[in-house]
Length: 231
Image (cartoon, rainbow, N blue to C red):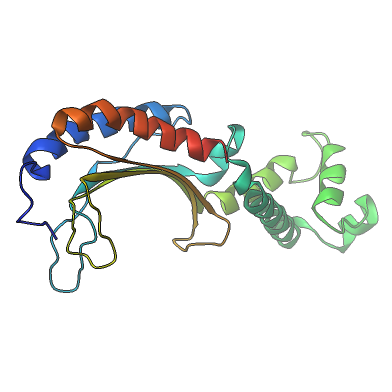
């Protein structure tokens, strides 16, 4: 994918060595706000091969993974709230069904009343003493909620992509050396892309040489992060 005829700056030699420590430092700062450890920094493939068409001229991606429910204790983009509300409801329904299958019977209906839903069950369990005669407690309901939510992974993704001018990719044709930055919140449910589960911020700038790039890259990354967190 690299434009071999591009004169002057060489992304491999001049830009990537500058970019890698900067994106790792910025990712560390961002992920630490959510108590997430970054994964290994991945270089974006820039050469096409059999079965793969490169769409950039280089860059890096850093990801951080977390149980989705872990992030609910932090301020997250408002655009994700509807999706996460649905996740909460699903976890309550799952916990209710599992608890009823595991512990409930007709005798308990007579003794404690029949809980029609999660909220009813919470009211009943809240009234029970931990030392009661029953073999279950509200902790068991919490465990079922956790069992559901631990299957849901969340990702924070920081990515910087580079493009030469007059890139040979017909879909993208830049007139100057261009850097595209994206910062993403992604709730990847069971490895599938789910509608409403992703929101991202972006920033783009052009640069003339490595010094120009170095002056702009940190600020661009911070703007992309600010953009996604304000959504």
